[in-house]
Amino acid sequence: MVGTESERGRHGMPWFQPGRIAAMLLLALSVLAPSCGFKALAADTIVDALGRTVAPGQASRILTLGSDVTEIVYALGAGQRIVAVDRGSKYPDTVTQKPNVGYRRQLSVEGIAGLRPDLILAAQDSGPPEAVEVLKSLAIPIVFIPQDNSREGIERKITLIAAALRLEDKGKVVSSQVLNAFQAATDLASRIPPERRKKVVFFHGLVRLSAAGAGTSAGAIIRYAGGLNPMDVVQGYKAASEEKLIEMAPDVILMMSDGKGGPTLEQVFGNRALAATPAAATKALVVLDGAYMIGFGPRTADAIRDLAKALYPQG
Image (tube, rainbow, N blue to C red):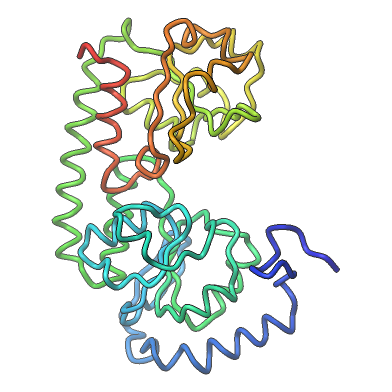
């Protein structure tokens, strides 16, 4: 039977086959378990975002899944322990020199096991579900990090990762610095009077015009930066029609960088639906790096400040 795209491994073949899974399990149990010191450190456990009790072990060969997860490990001074990252992890620059396991929601179990990590730190939304279930069953400890788009969420991430790496004291220092910066950035944005607040809509891309609603990291960043998100009446990402955009009348369009110098003003406001918005009249487009803008990690305070300055250049 031919698998779906998310079920395929790196070679284009369906990976979710009983025989292959059994072989991978045997490989992990016989080869990886002795190197990670799992049994010797079984008493030192933490509880992850899924409520699972995990013994992180030595954590000398870490695989990180999630830009925020990777950045926190570096902020804790443990970046040299990372042996591989996901496609979304691009900061700091040295990350690009490490092996890449692809998109964190389309993981290949075989590819991950082949890198021989002794700890996986994974964003809570990693997938697909079938791959995650196999990863849980391996001898490699895996700790799921919460997806929480808030100041408190960043603190929880740092605290959990620091505990997994046995860097609790360093974690307290990093948390204090990050949370103080976050509070300062949101305090600045909160001074924008209600009548001056601009309506901002975030789009992932221009093909379907899928806009960020309530419960999204982009929606949270807009709010923290002093903007108003007219899409917050819906949950998650929803397609926005031309009629809906005219009704919402956004003052600013917010998008992620495509890494090639775009999207440009011509590309964005050349779109028929977006051309009819107030944002088009003033050419109000803000483009930020994706991981920087919506990662909710150590750099989020800077992203909030940058977006607030772009929205309200006069202060």
